[in-house]
Image 1 (cartoon, one colour):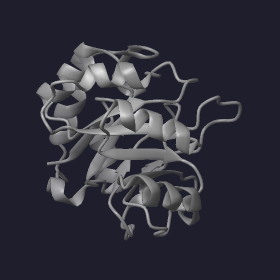
Image 2 (cartoon, one colour):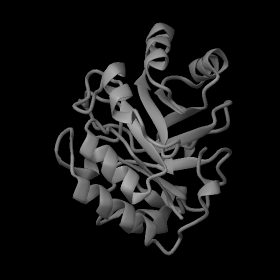
Image 3 (spheres, one colour):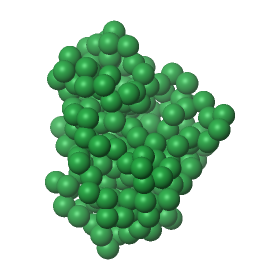
Image 4 (spheres, rainbow, N blue to C red):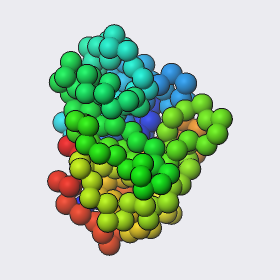
Length: 217
C-alpha cells in the first residue's frame, strides 16, 4: 500500500480521521509561523493514548537544539522532519538519536538529493517568491522529474497534493509515499476529516500502490 502522511494535524478530529483511514504517519508542525502550528504541550495532548502507529513526525524549521530538546521532553516523536542544511541534520540525528527526514525543494532534476546521512527525504516544490513558509505552499511540482529516480533513501512526495490529484501524482512520479497538509483542509490550518479520508482512499487506489516497507520508517 502507498504510505500516507497527514501533516499539520492540530485537532482531535483530524487525528482520528488519519488514524481511522490508516495513515502511516501523523505530522505535527512546530513552526510558529504556520497556521498549523502546535506547541509541544498541544502535540502531547493530541497523541496521548494513540497506538504506536501511525508514527509521529515533528516538523521543524532551522530549530535550535534547545527547542528540539524541549519538544522531545514533552512529546515522543518517531521522526524529525527538518528544513535545514544537510550538515545540520547530521548533527541533530547524532545528538538526539531520532530518525531525520530532510525536506528538499526540487525544481529541476539536479536538485534531487544525494545521501548525506538522513533517514529519508520529503521532496516538494520550491516555495513561490514571497512565501513566509518553507514548505510546498500548495504548489505542484513537475512530478515527471522523479520518474525513474534511483533515490539513495526512502522518500515521500509532497506539494499541492489533493484527493483529486494524488493518484496521478503517484503514477507520474513513482512515489511510494505521499505527504499532504493544505490539500485536506477546509480553510488554512483547519483539517477536514472527510478530505483526509478521501485523500487516503485516493492514494491507496493508485495502480502503483507499493509495499509500505518501501517508505521511510
